[in-house]
Length: 433
Ligand SMILES: *Cc1c(COP(=O)(O)O)cnc(C)c1O
Image (cartoon, rainbow, N blue to C red; front, side, top):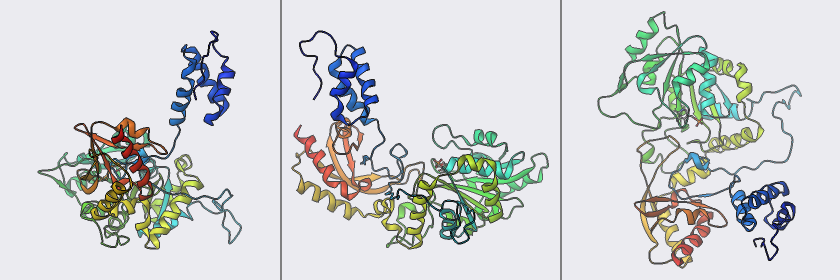
């Protein structure tokens, strides 16, 4: 219902217009803003639509039908979080009654799961990189291959982060080829005062052709600590939590456990990429180096609260139990094309769809700046025309689809099965229009 201007020529008062919108459930102060804008625009009747637009800007769940498993705009890894309305032992040792440490829960368990001596958790991967550089190399040089001086997403350029951390960048090798001799050359030059080697996984691009990069094993043999920014945080290349072992599309993704085993002193990764957890950044590895990070004053500005640490702890316990296939991310990543085909057929049977909605094979991707160029075989629907806006208006949940060459595709790989009915309903609505 939209308030009508009626026959009364005078615009309604802001307050009475706001009251007429009470049924939207929006708080009164926000309805007052909406009513004021509508009246100022000379269109009081638009207040209802404006209120609806405002509500749709709130943070809320959506159905990801893009086939991008880790879509940064859609919050990366999907995750169910259950938290009691309660105090917690965040920094209390329940055994002694003394002050405890917030590293004792998620951090310790993560270290156990990753085969690291110690781990510390911060708010995101970018913070983890910054903290590592500041804590281990402030005022000193950090050797980085010219092939790894990357920009990771909007505004996070490694050379800039280096400056902000107080360390200075020592560029090594060339864009396409960097050998371990290039690193040792820079370490031998006292002007550089190199205190850390940083290896950055080329997570969002590939250099192909005449290329060479020093391995973790080679770099670990150098005289200064080696930190590896892995980005995606795949815990173990063997994916022991997946019944069929690692899917082929994961084969070039480095993992936390193996990178540490190969000799990295520290690894840095995100919580919400291939770990499948909440947004977080993790620094794991040698106890003395992790402790330097945890004791650095910047840590205090980057530490997560109990909501994130609780969610991360649950995710890590799932790995330790061998149950990680049940994490929403791995349930989606691990589904076979046969599973997805079955779901698509079921959705078709359950909903009266027009003939122009076809089931089709699709290609899903990892996304989130991980595994560039890697294609995941997938399955879903294709509809001629651009229906992206209509699907974003779907109820009860907006559906985010992809449009290419004037065809709308809906990829089931990134849709949780409990959303199949809502998806089918929306697709049926499309073909009816
Ligand atoms: C994603 C990524 C980051 C940044 O992590 P955020 O959690 O997005 O802050 C840093 N380094 C690499 C290699 C990455 O892939």
